[in-house]
Length: 370
Image (tube, rainbow, N blue to C red):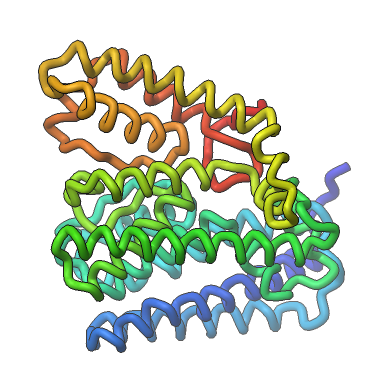
């Protein structure tokens, strides 16, 4: 039974919300360090402002209740709900100061999109965005894709309230007996995926003619947006700008991996590889994706934009996987999207996005097992 909120409930909620905002201050160090490394002193100051705001607000909220008790369901729900709002409000500050947004509302839109791993953006002149600001966009994807509470608990913050906050964020997967161990395993798997695929994609960028440092950053950012099934890209022309089949193949694999239940990763981690092949949800995903690719390829073949079979399969496969994983990445130009994809194709992609992939993954949608 849900009880009326008391003043004490608000104080406890404020304390744990302060913990999350203090975590944001630590996360903001990543784009600040990026700005310092690349001598982007303007953005460095912007992130110092954001760090200062986070430290002040987070500390004040923590002092509202010095020794909070264990969170109940209502309090945990309030913490996780308000956390998305509070972090987006602060995360939008350096974006606004970058000069690439017309108003605070525009910057807030991108911050919400980043933390919710939606990938929609209203940024202007993305191709000339600083390294630090681009890093921040993908850090938001990383934190939001995993879930704010997962990151918090992996650091050991939350104590006895960890299980309550974890479940209130909409998560049910317990791949290990202990909640903190579970969140740390999820974080470890994510780091391994992002760094390994980031290096692979970075090599593809170098082969394509990009300078090594920029190639590494683009590889890292694309790996984050792929595994977190998010949607931001470093440039305005999306994945199409790279004109790289190997990169598209790597991203397709990564998007599918991001759509697999973390419980299966834990099983593979323990040596039970057969669990992955025998999982009913994985098999359903294989059938579902194959069906969507066939329908989309037939639709593309009916247009005159792509005349060769390999080109049709390449574009169709990538767009379907991007849609079904709710990533939103594009391997075709905007004019090709309009000319090659019929109304039926858009309906198929919309259906794919609404369904999503596996429960307990970074992908959105209704989920296959439902």
